[in-house]
Image (cartoon, rainbow, N blue to C red; front, side, top):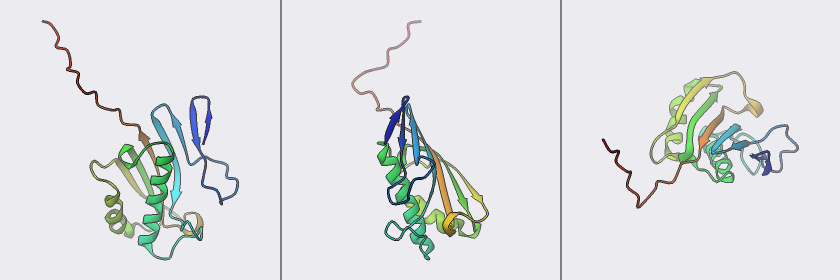
Length: 143
């Protein structure tokens, strides 16, 4: 993490060498996330099994949010690129398990080949939820 000009830059995980981008940038309450793919954290490769790739992808996405003190619940927009749109239902079956309430707005787009042979790439925008005020009533307006 590097704070710079009221921005918090989240660096990619170590072990990937120097990369010319941030995994995410927090500006105020809004967190902009760069693309994530589902690499196996041990091998740094895309697994052969689609389900594993989706879980690695969502786990990586969740971990980046956590590094900015956010969670999946803070997502407001997600964009998924997929090199084989026939995997739409399989992706959704796992994706939905990462949410306990509302889903963010989302686009699921067919794409050409993705880096490292990945089938999916995900990026998103999260906004820090405001804590509800407690013990205060909203004042009524006089007429």
